[in-house]
Length: 196
Image 1: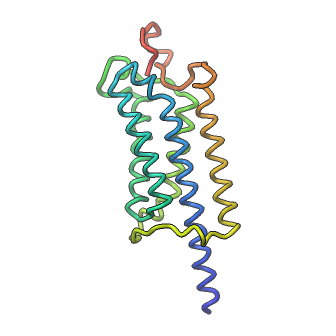
Image 2 (image 1 turned 90 degrees about the vertical axis):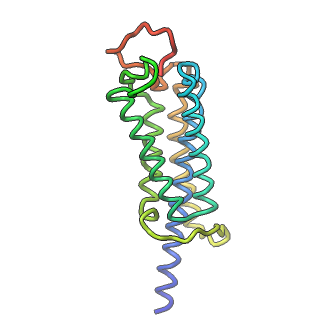
Image 3 (image 1 turned 90 degrees about the horizontal axis):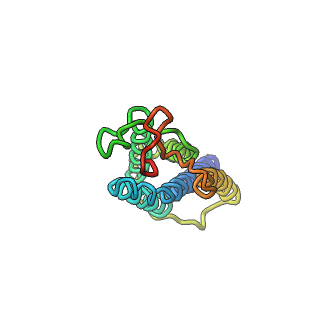
């Protein structure tokens, strides 16, 4: 009887480790992609640059909290931040932002970087939502308890999010301008700014 409880407890701990590393990798990947558009947004509207710098900072801090100071509050903060960011993105792509310069108030085109960030943000939220709904006491991590299976699964999740991050960064590195931060074709094509 106690052996089965121990086994179930070990599986729960291993699942939690994989979830936390996966969520942290997704948050860090999203933060990296967001950091790649800070200058572009700052040039178009300084407040947008501040938004992306703040978002990149929050995502990085949340990733560290997920790894080193895990609690239901940390999990809830990941869900709220990730889902909130995707909601802002949806508004910017469907109706345009309700404030800011004219170019920000028009729907933007979809881009590879946008989609990569959305995938990672929604994945981070989905991974931690079961823990956000629980009452977990805050605790520091003991990485010595990791099994080889948990390390392998956590590594695989991290590799997936590294690939998604690279895909999200490719347009900005290739100079193709497909960061997803441009106006849709139906909008004014002769805007003098680099777009949002």
